[in-house]
Length: 77
Image 1 (tube, rainbow, N blue to C red):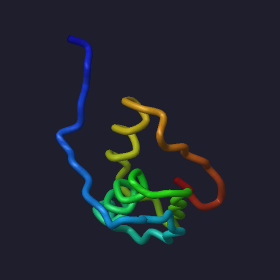
Image 2 (image 1 turned 90 degrees about the vertical axis):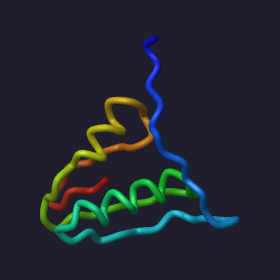
Image 3 (image 1 turned 45 degrees about the horizontal axis):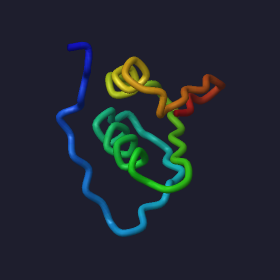
């Protein structure tokens, strides 16, 4: 089998909306915002002042095309 499913279930409010989030150095908080943004209407934009670990972004980039990474003076997800 060449199928891959995440062991994850997202339960949210009735109408979640995307947000603009300025990330600190916590990769855990950034990952939580990424997962919340996957289940929201609109776009979720994450701006990093300093680069943190990117395991969640790498996992999602390799297994789907639901996120985009843009490089600039500040890292934007």
